[in-house]
Length: 240
Ligand code: PGA
Image (cartoon, rainbow, N blue to C red; front, side, top):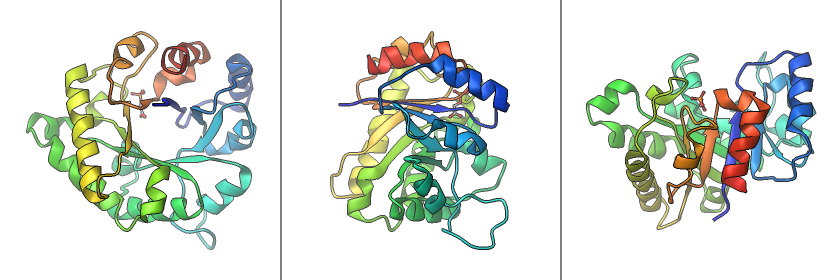
């Protein structure tokens, strides 16, 4: 199974810092490393030896939607992936499963690969409600996706209580939850397999352990990916 390292740089870095970062990353020839820079800098990251993705896309291709970025525009720039349903967009920007579903559909129609983020809050985790929450997110966010387009979807399991906190579920919990996500997807799509990444406080020190979880297709890295050396180390471990 080919693995993936997705690097979500979030709303970070000035132009100067971005140029420095690109230099530090160097000449990477591996399309299974996907970098998601701030949208402003996407043109600097496309058509390189690695893949390039957008941290978001709107649910329409064009029109009077001030400040938004369309999947068609992303595709025309050479962007290959888009993250949808990230918990920061769900929580801070009030994106619902229904809004995310519209975005997923139009991104896929524009031939973008989608990394759909799902995950439970700390409260939901403590109330043993994780599976219900994940099932609802998967079912609602992936409504009306054609069988053909499911190949372009990757699910990232990101427990919200683990994002940016340094607290990570045990490997056993990640394994069991990943199996559950795969089962839910299979039941929706007649036995089809889905690739699942883990995200939440992944760094250059814990990556060797996380990489031993055998049903994962890789990781989604936030904070640690802003440091080119740390990202290179993670890439070495996961992609060899
Ligand atoms: P983190 O972020 O690695 O900083 O926890 C992960 C994410 O938000 O995708």
